[in-house]
Length: 271
Image 1 (cartoon, rainbow, N blue to C red):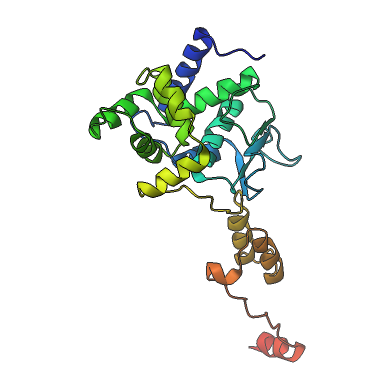
Image 2 (tube, one colour):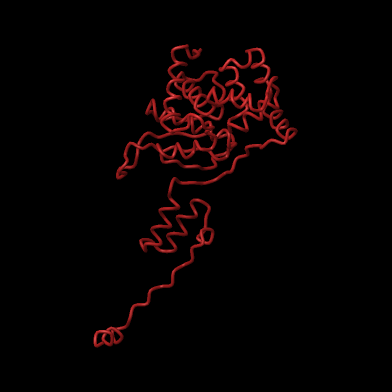
């Protein structure tokens, strides 16, 4: 049986979240999808569609042998899962990068803390604190004049902060905004019913984008081709990894260089 976080651990995580929000200058700003840019500052990030039932992602705390930034970790995020889940996974991984420096694998049931290690519970709580700051949450509740919490109002807040429905429910409980009995009632909703409610209330479904991004591979490949370091065929090969073609980027094959003949060189020299 795994234990829950104690008061000291929770306060420590709150302090960590406040510290990092200040470091990123996001103390008065909803993070949302900005988390991907923040993660990119501290890791080399790969987005790949692993499948909706596959792990949400993983972190490898090491670099390649010849990497100048050897200690910069690699993070892979599963782009087959909904966008709000990708956001949560990215914040979760930041905790491991900032405070544990250990390899990590995110299971597909990440939001369920049953049977999870204490380190995973800490990372989940950090992600919730970092993405849904208590002060900002209460400000938005006041702004939208939410007096009584319903599935609709919770989904609206989830959409606003770009976090999963269950994360928002737990956050409302963690901040004392709703009582445990109410929290448990909302958590009892199935994933299918949540998706149906999103359609009823015309809310964004946060569907997966299945994007393929290999850190800055595309940028490096394009720059290398423009500088003449790689052939057009090599560029095509590298772009295919990200499901792209040179045409998608407005790049055309350069005309082959034709070197002057010996007679032409002699003529040039005589001039």
